[in-house]
Amino acid sequence: MAALSLEVRAKSFPAVGTAPEKRVLENVRLSVEPGERLAIIGPSGCGKTTLLNIAAGLDRDFEGRLVRDRSARLAYVFQEPRLLPWRTVADNLRFVLFDDDPTEVDARITAVLAEVGLEGTQAVFASRLSLGMARRAALARAFVVRPDLLLLDEPFVSLDEPTAQHLRLLLLELLERHRTTVLFVTHALHEAIMLADRLLFLTASPARVLAVREVPLGAAERRDPLAVEACRNRLLAEEAELARLLLPASAAAPSPLAEVAPG
Ligand SMILES: Nc1ncnc2c1ncn2[C@@H]1O[C@H](COP(=O)(O)OP(=O)(O)OP(=O)(O)O)[C@@H](O)[C@H]1O
Image 1 (cartoon, protein in one colour):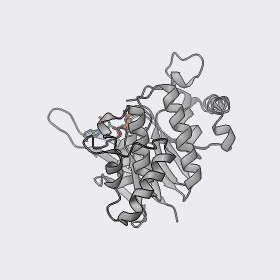
Image 2 (image 1 turned 45 degrees about the horizontal axis):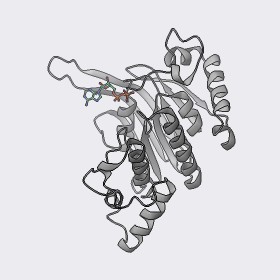
Image 3 (image 1 turned 180 degrees about the horizontal axis):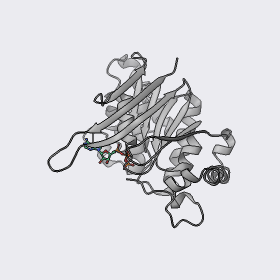
């Protein structure tokens, strides 16, 4: 059985004031197998976050069907870290572990903070963290629940490229170590190639599925920026429609920096 199976026949946001009703998603189907990592890629504002919210069960106002094991533990890393600034790092993690044995909780928090490179920060208030550290803490809060299904919405947006790359490598390490099932959203094809097994491309709004492609890279190649770049260029060269979707018309030479800007 798939870890997640979703069919959105239609999703619209109702008219508000002078803004008319907006159709965002149309006939989008996807499924994620246990242990698989699926990336959703599409232009800014096409409906990626909306789709992720539906997959999470946060938005039930759509035509279609969501099938997910209700007993599966779900973690969601939002576009913004969404930490509670008045709580310490440890308390932010403790907040999502309320059902667990309190004697085990501290050890789990210490271990996961070490995994994300935040050892020794238990007592630091979240408001004191840099954005890079806050994003690490948000990853720690997701992994501390040992999720059966992890949803990520552009988890490295607004970071400088070296920091983002550092965190991508860290996330890849965590995903491989824990064999986590993942559904994640990004606008950056090189990030998707690095982290995902399969890529689902959405059209501009109202979003439909444009294409689904496997990522033919092994663990070592994912960590090699040149191999990722070559894979990306191959994909864009083979698929004219993807290139039109992801590259500005003026882009002469494909490069990660030429991709659509984050929203
Ligand atoms: N609650 C809402 N009410 C009305 N319109 C909304 C609402 N949430 C999102 N939208 C609109 O739906 C469309 C899709 O938004 P969504 O955030 O899902 O896109 P996205 O692909 O994730 O964008 P980005 O790449 O900028 O993160 C946008 O036009 C957005 O303005």
